[in-house]
Image (cartoon, rainbow, N blue to C red):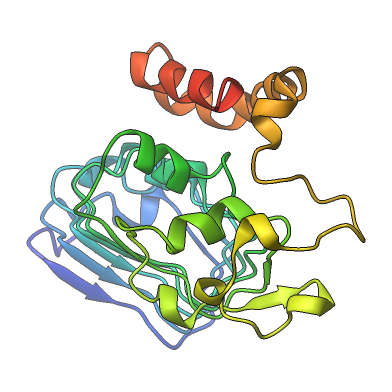
Length: 238
């Protein structure tokens, strides 16, 4: 792309591309939209879009092999992020602070648990209301995601396809819609599943969990007061 500095849209779908780096896009200073669907992407270097933080608005990496999104750390002007049909096992910490992003697509991934350590929980604590996230066809463990069940049954639900979300496990709840469940009435006694209020009952354990996850998110928002408020709210949740 050395001679294509004015390109605004790049589509590289339907190929065997496995990795992209800073070198691939360093000349595209005007790029606003990047689509790489149905490839074999499994790696995007963290600094790949460092020159595009002010211009890039839409990215779509649907139907790839991605499991993480470190490159999102400084992408504050993105409006839409599509990770449908990848291999994420949890919502990435890099979306903790969504910036300008209004649409997140994580359908058909491998996300089993969404709890108080998820970016979604942080969004609720910072009163974000203008975000739309799509999560259909993920294999939710509903005993591990009872906070999430409470959330999607609430009033200010940011999950646009929440009516379609179903449990994959445990067996007693397989196929049941999350919006049809009552987290406080669920029987999760057959496995090591914490209760929806386990953070308030076991604050010491909560602090331990928070410190374990801090290593994953502190490098994104080190020194910022809202991060520490987020951590504190998890540890002392009531």
